[in-house]
Image 1: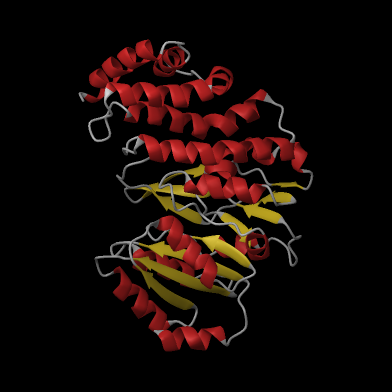
Image 2 (image 1 turned 180 degrees about the vertical axis):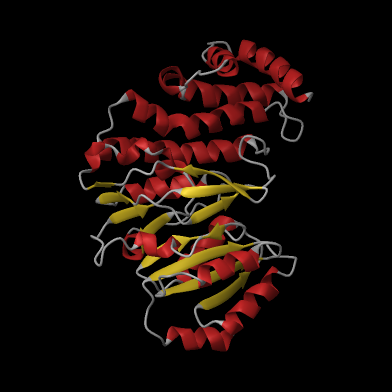
Length: 347
């Protein structure tokens, strides 16, 4: 494997580096790789980062690398998808970066769609939509088919929530920009690390281009999401504290004033806040009353204005939670949340 990597380093640099973190993906990895190798656009490399897989994923990676000079394989202990993607950035040689998840699929034109012009203007973030597949059936197109090019960022391309907090795939990133500003995925959080990376990246771009077609297929599986998986209060708070200053910087750079756009920017941070409060009462991370009260005061007092202005109460549950979060008495918040969580989660 080292010999294969060494040989590839002597060849011309590819235009696109496709970075794929791999962890226990033996059931879907081959389908993913075969789809990428069938691309109509051919000037690319594939960087496979095996993140300590315990199944046959690494063997599959090595097999494909031996068969195709476009592929390089790197192995590391299981340290998470963020550090796997960072390793991919360290090893990538392309002018542009594209991310693919090992359990998803791509159509033959996925990469070609990004290269919409012979010379993409420097500092342009290119994105496309994606198809959703569940149980072998393509369900719908995520992201409108409208094509646009925002050279003036104050025209608010931020109306696309997928651009802000979506996953890193279906986007074409510029490697020079990533290196110049030392942009990395946050390894200290295990949820919304993609959105944090995007917020950092948005601070340095000059334009946004969205193509009207899509070549990425997100395969929806029965896995836990941020709203169903349990996270500790400390991790959720850490992510919130990283995210909020970045959002303020984006608002300033893009001169965002419309309430709808501002609400969209704060959706994910406020979801983290909601989950952080709930985590204080769940069995796995439950704290005693003294620690709960201090944690509530730390979280809710500091974000009172944010909750009041941007917490969108679009259902009964949200309305109830917003009213609770805005109470001045942490003792009352604690009693109410204790009963709500007990009823909802039986914990």
